[in-house]
Length: 387
Image (cartoon, rainbow, N blue to C red):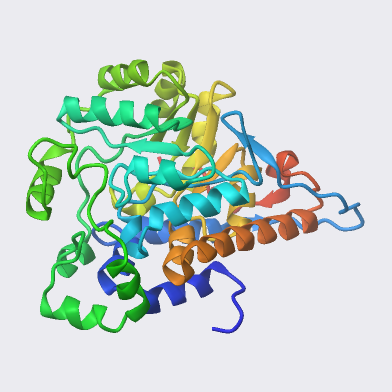
C-alpha cells in the first residue's frame, strides 16, 4: 500500500501482517456483535455543521486530560495482548504516544510488564487494573504501578464476567499461540511478525507470570486467568483500591447515567463512557448515544471521556462537541501497531489529529476546546429513541 490516508488503510495492513487469531481478537465483539457494529454506525449518523467565511488560522488541538497537557484530547486505551499484535507492542505504543504527546494506558493483561514499559517509555503512562479475586496480587500490582511512576490508575468496571467472543474461542486464542497445524500454517505467512517475535523474550502476560501465586508457565496462567476476574467487585472494593492507590483515578466502563452519578459522587477524577468496544454486553447501546445522558448526570463534577467506536478524527470531534472532555482509542492504534509497529501507532495518531484539525476548521472552529453541540447535526430522537 503506497499511500496511507486513513485508519482503514492501517486496518487492512494489520490484517495482512498479523496472525489471524490476533487480528480477530482486535476486530471482534461478543455474541452477535451488534454493539460492536453500532458503536461505529451510530457515529456515522451524527453529522457535522459546515461554516464558512470565518477565520480558520491559528488552530489548536491541544487540551488537557485529568490535568495532563495533551497534543489532542485522545488517549491510547488499554488493550490486552498488545504485545502479540507486534513484538514488544506495549513498549512501542507507549513510546509513540509519549513522543506524540498523548497518554498511553497499559493493560493488566499486557505482554510487556509494567517494569518493561517504565524502563523504555520516555514519559509516565496510565495503568489499567482488572480486579482479581487474589487480593494479594491486586495489592502488589498497584504498588508496582506506583513504583513505576504511573500517573493515573484506570479501573475497569465492566469485566467482572467475561463476555463470549466467538472468534476467540474458534481460533483457540492464547499467548503465546498454541502450535496447532492451522496456527502454524497461518503464522508461516506472517514472516516479519514471526522474526520479530523470535527476537523478543516477551511472549507471556508479563504482569502476571512470576507475580501471581503458582503461575509460572502458559498452562497455569490460563487456568489462573479463567478463575480470577472478581464477580464481587462493588463500590466498597473500588473504595479500597482508591485508597490504596492515592492518585488520579479513572473509572472505565460506565454506560448508565445512574452509574455515572455514583462514580462522580465517589470522587473519580474521570469516567470513561465505554462498552468495552462491544466485547462485553452485546445489545447494549453505543457510547455516542449514551454520552449526553451521562454528561447530564455528572455535570462538572468529573471529567468524561468516551471510547468504543472511534475510527477517525471526525469521531473525536463529534464526541467532544457533545461534551466529552477527552476520548480513548483502542482498535485505531492497534491497527497501526500491527501494520507498522511504533511508526504505525504514530501514523494512526497523525491521521486522527489531521482529520480532527481539518474538520474542526471546516466547522468554523479554531480551538478544540471550543467545540460544542452547535457544531453537529443529530437525527431527531437519536438520543431518546430508547426507554
